[in-house]
Amino acid sequence: MLICPSGSLAVFGIRTRFDEDDPTIKRLEFYPAALSMELSDYLDDGPISIPRREAFQIYIADIMKLLAKDAGITDINVEIRAVTVAGDVFSVERYLADSLRRNPTTNAPITTDLQNISAHFRFEFDRLISHELDDPDSISKLTPIYLTNDKYFLDAFDLITELDNPLFARMVHNYLRWRLVATYINDLPYSYVHKHREYLSAYYGYTLHSTNEDYCTREVIRRFPFAIQRLYTMNSTKYSNAVTTVETVSNELIKSFKTYIDKNAKWMVDVKTRNMAKEKLNALTTAIGYASISSNDASLDDYYDKFVVTADAHLQNSYSYHHFHRSVLSNALKNPNLLDHWDFFETRPNRLFDYIAVFNRLFVIASGMHEPLVNTEWPW
Image 1 (cartoon, one colour):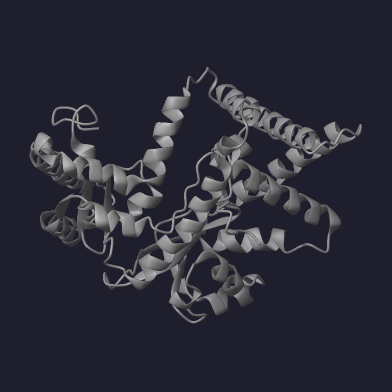
Image 2 (image 1 turned 180 degrees about the vertical axis):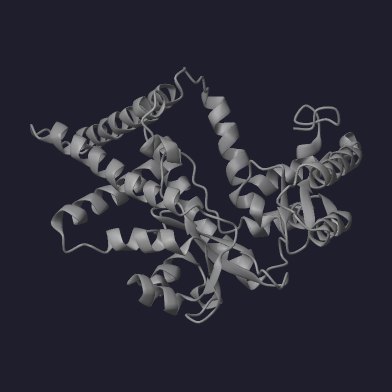
């Protein structure tokens, strides 16, 4: 199984997106999600990439040795096994990185269905979906879905279905095991968190200071974005300048794009294409505000009802969050207008805005448009 209810991403991920032609429908989308580092870190041989991939493999080996220690494994081969796992993980991810470099991902998916891709890639996607959605009936084998970067998927499944080869089988197993562990690394005891911080310092080349308070704050924002929006709506009178700020930013963006079309878009060789681009810019609208689900406590409580939180059970709570996310995917398919575009911020909460082509609209969370995060003089 490549993605399981544990929430770990291996080889690919699953999300929802609006239908390319019908804004009242949302589709499941399968997209590449396989790597632990930047693409160049696997393939380039420069002074930045080489130390990074060395640090990555040392980090994996250290984590594997910690797991062995906690499991009471003390035989003399632990070090060799840990290094083997690290090498296998890097080899698989490097193979997938090479595919992504040869086949860059675009924002133009192909339309298919679970039955077709199951036969095409020799993998039971319909069984996978029964685990990934809390209501498997929200999609059938023949429901149209989106597949982003089909050439990457061909390469990836050529590798991971070669399980008759013992070497490949071991490498894939170790890769999947690592992706699962990596998902929960910050939910494990402090020794694991500390190793992760050491790795980040080695990866970026300088020490990253992160207090426990900062970590907890980030986790709340990441997992409860609508609750954070609710805090802003409760105090919205304090931030009456948000609309003005967003209008200013939006107008400047449109003006800049028009200048680009007139002076720098050399690839637009004919006047008709330029005029069509300008017409689309003139028709662009900006939606400013909050998800309606964040407008009152009752809606918010209902939305998070399936997220079970237990005191003093941090790892279990993290696991429960991934279970809860299954209901988010099902909800998006069954009720595409429930969150409108805002469910994008559930999966990408660090983004302050998003452009959705089917609406030709720039969506902005108003709470993200207040100082000190942003102002009209220096918006980004």
